[in-house]
View 1 (cartoon, helix red, strand yellow):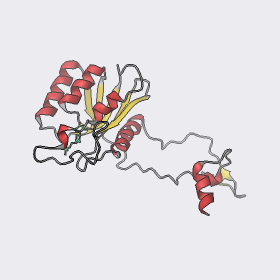
View 2 (cartoon, protein in one colour):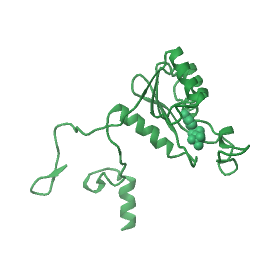
View 3 (tube, protein in one colour):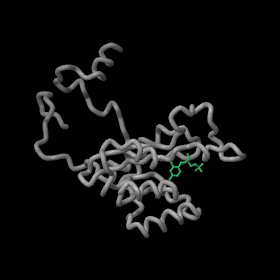
View 4 (cartoon, protein in one colour):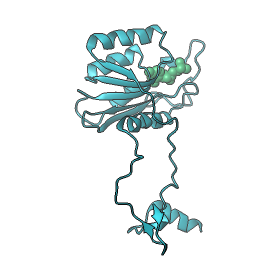
Length: 194
Ligand SMILES: Nc1ccn([C@H]2C[C@H](O)[C@@H](COP(=O)(O)O)O2)c(=O)n1
């Protein structure tokens, strides 16, 4: 927003052009969910989207409900590893769904799904998987996933982001220059601080 000579903000009448695409929006949502993960090595987020571009499920990798993050292992070596316990992001996104069916949905996920999640994805009716990293491409579990997706007709493709970075800046919106009733929480916070 620019400013006209008398100090009043100038309001543009044409639409913004630097908005993010649907793919960017949903992949970024998966990455934001991954920020909730306590896994010290690999943080994964998944976002399920309907054929009307509505988000219907979100998840990240974490311990099951009731299995406290501080009481279960996060290591990869030895008998007791995180792999015995952690729920994968894809599985969590599926069980967290807020609609009756995931038929014809697509999933945005930070890491290519393992074979166990691939089974869940296929059985749930998800038709497309958009992933970012394929760092375990050589693992038997990833090879098995691709074999099952190919047989079941689930499409998958690697996402290449338009922007390397997407920054969320909570101070970006200048609440003070806006007339709002009631005032926003951020504005109240600023008033309390001053
Ligand atoms: N598609 C995937 C693959 C893995 N995860 C989770 C499971 C673990 O918490 C972590 C992988 O750990 P690493 O072996 O890389 O130390 O990521 C998932 O949620 N989805």
